Each structure stands twice: as C-alpha cells, then as structure tokens.
Image (cartoon, rainbow, N blue to C red; front, side, top):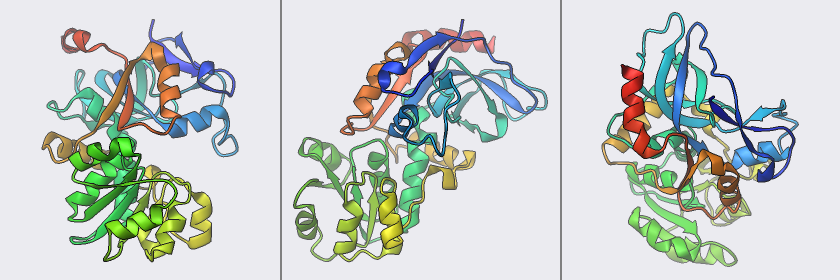
Length: 320
C-alpha cells in the first residue's frame, strides 16, 4: 500500500510515523501525483510541535510536508493541461510527504526533464520564499545586499537570486560555510557577536538592502547599519516587523505555478543551483527533521520516496 508521513500528537520528530494509507483518487480538476522527492522545512517542525497551533491547528492524524516533485499518475475529469507520466513540481500544505498526493491541476508546474528531482522538489517552497524575500528589497545593479543565514535552504537561493539582479552579496553564516558561500559568488561574514562591525568592514560604502532568513537580531543590525526599513525583509522575526515596519514577504504572498516554472527554468539553464545537504529515504523522516531543527544545514534537506535506481522503470511503467 502507499505510504504517508503522519503524526497523531504534537511533539518532536519522534511523533512522526510512516504509515500505510489508501491510494487517493483525483476529483474533477485534480491530478494524482506519484511523489518522487519531497522537501523538509523548519516551519513544518513548528507546526508539528504545536508552535503555530493558533494559526494552523493540526487535525490528527495530521500529514506532513509541503513541497514535492513527481509524475502525474492519474487525471481527474476536465484536466487537459497534463498527461499521465508528465513530471511536475507542486506545493500541498501538510500532505507532500506521501507516495501519492492529489493536487489541483492549476497549482502544478512542469518540471524540466533536465533538472534533477532533488533540485526540483524544493523550488515551490524555498525557491519561491527566496524569490519573495529578494524581490521585496528590490536589489539593483551595483547594490550591496546582505543575506543572513546565507548557507541554508532559503539563504543559499536568495544570495544567487540577488546576484542575478546585479547586486553584490554578503552572506552571514558559520565559518565552516565560508568556502561554500564563496563558491556561490558571495562574500562570507561570520555570524554571531560582533556581526555589525564585521559587516561594516565588509561593506565600507554601506549596505543597500538586507534579507533576513535567520532572525536572532539580524533586523536590529540592519537598522543599526542604516538600511532603510522598506529595503529590509525578514522571514524569521515578527517582532522586528512590528518594531521597525520592515517587510515580511514570504512564499504565501507570491506563490504561483508560473513563478515555480520560471525558477525551474533558471535551474535548467544553469543560472540557479539548488544546493542539497542530505537526501533521506522516507523511513528516516525523523532523522531528517532532527537535522533540519539544528538550523545549521548547508543547503536543502529532502526525502526520497523512490530510490534513484528504481525511477526509470517506474516512469516507464506509468507512461505505458
């Protein structure tokens, strides 16, 4: 039977279970997708822990995961834009970590055949989030932009998207990620105490815009260094939004399948790289979330629901 990740009470990664579930059936305007890879994100851990229960209460047994990529396995009535066997990228809150998911057809984006599954799946979550945050601060050619948490899943894409707009980018991260950031064309600056002084030294002519993916006082530092509030976007500090009137544009504010498709084309063209930290099999979902909750990940953590050596045969069978 198909598998899905579920949890029946709030708690740590230990409450996550991989259980057998019936294969769902697509309704009118919907598509059944055989998921190949699904993303693992810090915000999902917060939902599972009950941190956001007031906004997003769980309905037990609750599913897990948002971003995924897979093959179209079945079409509901009225769906004409896809055919069985098509490769797609999607976003389904709390349902993505499952062998089969049902999605509205009009929120799926085509996956270019020449990009990997592991790179494709995160685009609907961290890819769109990074685009939203960078677009909010309006980087221009010649600008100096700082990205905090620059080595993480969102940050590592945000630095690249800012550079694609012509900006010079400074990325804050741990010292062990300095060479990684340099490989992305970014000037690395170590985070932690004394960050403001190190940023001043790295940008003697000033900082034009600031993308905060990490929280922990980064917005305070941006304001201290004279960055205009309208050119600061935080994904991790709601108090700073209220205090300074900075921006907080995120994935849900800009998501469209067209944007996902545009990001996928950037990857296909080699202009955008999706760094992958670790690929876990679905059965190791607990370990995947233990790693992501450490908040020191380089790039993206994903779950593989179809082992790479089984993918060609399964794709052929679906298209037969």
